[in-house]
Length: 404
Length: 130
Image (tube, rainbow over all chains, first blue to last red; front, side, top):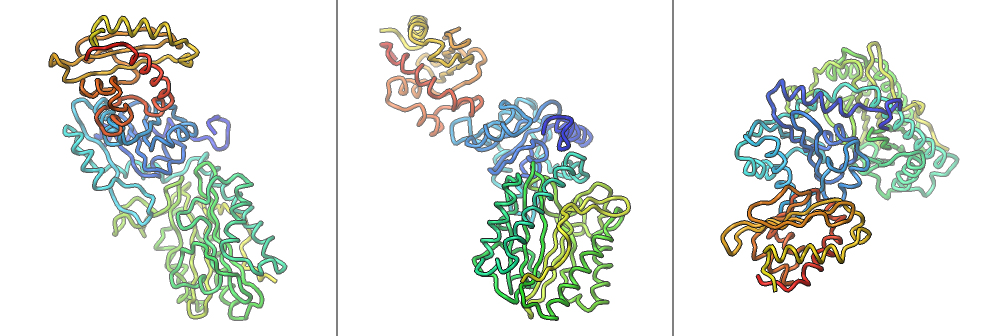
């Protein structure tokens, strides 16, 4: 991964220098990152515990995590063991003391420390907590804490080729998961299966193919059968022990992780017998997805795309069943939320007028739900925005198959 | 009987460490540790520094003040260190309770914990007046 000739190579020292250049422009003397997305984007390591990264004005950053996991994180990261430190509940070794001591070494006369404060719908986001903010403020009396996360957000938005290739590989792995699910459920294989079983067999196939994590905090692999596919506005279905039943829809939304790039693709089925009405819903959804994928390109915005797609849904008579949102953000692990840069009408939500530019990656995401008829579908696929279109990374054929 | 942190105590520590710690026993370690004792009986701060080079005892120093820079620094009150030396208080408990402050890479410190115990056990055999 750290070989320059690898298709998955990312210039992490270059990323740090880019952050430092922006810090200089904005008169930030030191950046204290705490969000999972910032840790992933700067270290190339998985940080499942509360962690921080100190980025000085010049030179290498230092990451801090729970001591039980610091050696493993250092082993995965491009940073060495002197730049991935562990904290523990010991004198001088707790996170506030360790990090403050290092900041004081960098800034003996104080200065502006950029922190990451905000809010998110995404639970593992990792903004600084009120307690942490007050504790750092007390430990660093000569420093001024200022909110600086837009620096990292702006830099993360456009993906480099190494990141794009990692997403392509994660999506290839997800397709293997879908192939395994299809092979398992077809020809009556679905009988007696539960949602959790499908989640597990997809996970096993993806792990065999190299996935390191069914990364989504929404329960890993999200599987919904029957009425659960059609919960109103429902785009989150952690697998349950519900059995797959004849005559019901089945939604398979699975997640693979490859080198911190997130594979995420949803595919839908109807279990025989499929009624004409169910097939009508299915055709609506497939046509909608096809049109959406055809429409995504540089220059469109979430709002313009939604308006165009909802017009199509209205013309076909299924607008009542569509959730009028067609995307969510994606990046290296921890970056799974809004589109844009927090500068829309509602802070920390997707900016509806954000104009997509080339080499942004997002999840094309659609939810169709008809609770009255216990039917719904979901589509998710990482897409790469291009000048005249988009590349959808998961190649599992778009369809809603009727499973015998 | 030698006085804790005196030149005589330092010489005895150095002698015993050199005699009893082979490079193999010290895993051919190159590192250094500096204990800084605040609120000593003379009202001053004192230090005890020990350095290893490829497992051999390289330097043992005591003196007034904060002492030389080391890979690991442990600081606390003289009384706390004395209690640990008299086996009245465990060093881990002192660290976990915040009575001592450790500065240095915690992950490396964990790897060296058993070596540190070997060192302390030898030092504890010296008849010392606190």
